[in-house]
Length: 351
Image (cartoon, one colour):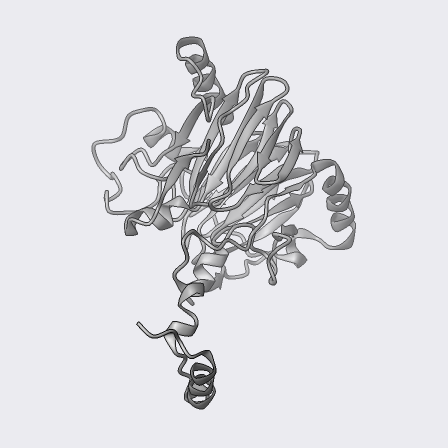
């Protein structure tokens, strides 16, 4: 086979460029690569560095005026705001005593992981749940939701949404709840507090009114940390730690057994003191919150030293391992559910 004449190929490329056509052989190596070409980089957002700026944000603007008072994280390698992995974003939201973040809904799925405070609430489609540190809360696609703080201290949580994925699909929509007589967009509570936990969070479900199993998101709004942490402790007392993950549990949709949201899955894992995990990699990106303990994650050539409330990201196909200086708990969420239905998800041990 004759070698490609680069000069003539370039002449052809220049000639057809006004027609918005490109010779495939000139760009094939960029489109079909031997391994994923991942632009994102590992990075850690320090809680100690960010927490004072949350206080400054509270002095600057109210939760109602801001719509959502959030410091949005952006991967250093991204050229646009709000993407931490290819398909997920994350940010720290704070709500002060007496405030209400007004009701709205959007196509993007969202999760909340509570990092500071006790007693503020969220309302999702008419169900109210109180939030405590370590609780994991879901807000499915197109669900009305608002947040309020009836406690006497600030409430801070990590928001995680699939904004980047929805924007990639050109499918973003948002809607605001009507303004009430008090001038606030606030939905009414229509069910008993924590109704979804009673109905679906006890390893049981009602015989009537069960959501259609084809619905892609969990009916449970709040997965309590106390319950998940106790389950990890039970595993620690009965099973040997996994060489990669320690003891790890997945939050699931109790109706289907699948991921909590169609685009996001979430986990809680326990690493014993002195744990040195084996290195592995996978095609999904992962965002972590250090909940308890201290340690480090070695991701590629980057070492991320973490302590409670630090947030860090391990991008797609990046070899990484966790090392725990002391007994530690990590919360994480990933975009793997986007890949699995198409058969393109992959993971493997490294070394």
